[in-house]
Image 1 (cartoon, rainbow, N blue to C red):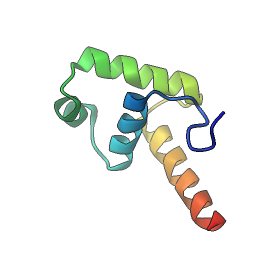
Image 2 (cartoon, one colour):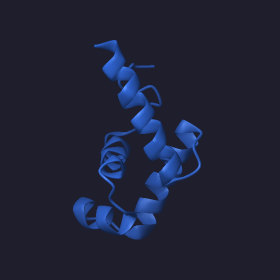
Image 3 (cartoon, helix red, strand yellow):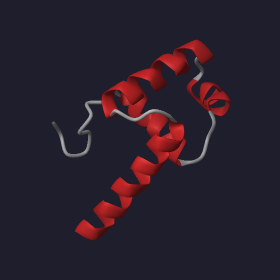
Image 4 (cartoon, helix red, strand yellow):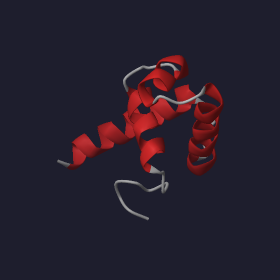
Length: 74
């Protein structure tokens, strides 16, 4: 596993995580990524499965905790 991508997320899944961290909703993300809601649901499902998390709020909290941990490593 790579330290910067410990869950082996795809490039699109990483981008979606960044958009989640910016507070965007799936409706907003599908416009930015030029994709359908069904595809967005699939990507989110893959993110949840790979991370063991169960929703966007959990992903957001996890990203925030990783960010805080990395600040402490500097």
